[in-house]
Length: 368
Image (cartoon, rainbow, N blue to C red):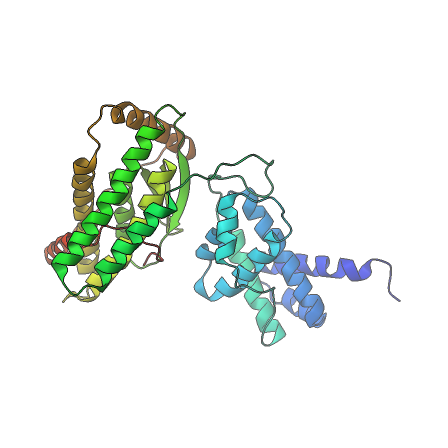
């Protein structure tokens, strides 16, 4: 005999069993859930994943960050779970909407293959999700009180011009022409940032924050490259070595430029390193550290040459820097600075050379 409401209660009870299995590693719970059949097991898996994700939203995580943080084998299931869980929220921050749009291809949560094997994959993903740490909340999540949110950013017309310059730089077979186009693109972006600073000089200067996720190996020198770009664009950064991401704090326009440019330079440095004569770890580590060092020099020089000839820029940049420092210290108190060590001089020299040839224009690709 079935009792009223039992059909609804069973998935929730079995979802708790899956969560328990993720905590304890016991396979008996997985067998119990599998014995309930595919339909009920799928509902239980979705319920357990929903609960784990809701806890992560309370811990400061964002949709695309969850997908970036889990093992690659779990990305399809994580993407489906994130999209399904967020579908019940009506008012989402623009950052959340953009990230969910990037996951739009994910379908509903499905258990493919033998049922017990599929449930083990769910349990592994639950374990990964529950092991993720607390993060600073950068934007309001779906469980936070609704607030009116402005959505500033780089003028899309400017980005279109810059991306057009990049496309020409990438397509030309002539290095001198590519370098000239890249320099023009970087100059355009820097000049736009300074012009916006002057235009908004009378407005309150507020700092925004975001996180940029990297792909291994060599996460530490890749994070140094992000820091080099961030510093040259008036932003501050902090590296999460266990997660493989970099927290960035700066004015919204500067953050946009920093993320696009750092992503582009990661791709370029990986391509340049693939042609290097040495494949040893020490060589490649030195290569990437030198690359970051030289890129910082080039970007700083480019910024100095592009500053507008007006004293109006000084007070507004000072105010922005103060706002960035305040937000950074609030989000990341007690940060320690670490310096990189180099053991391969040939890798360092090759990295400097590759950075001299780098295209300093930001463009939208995944960090390598």
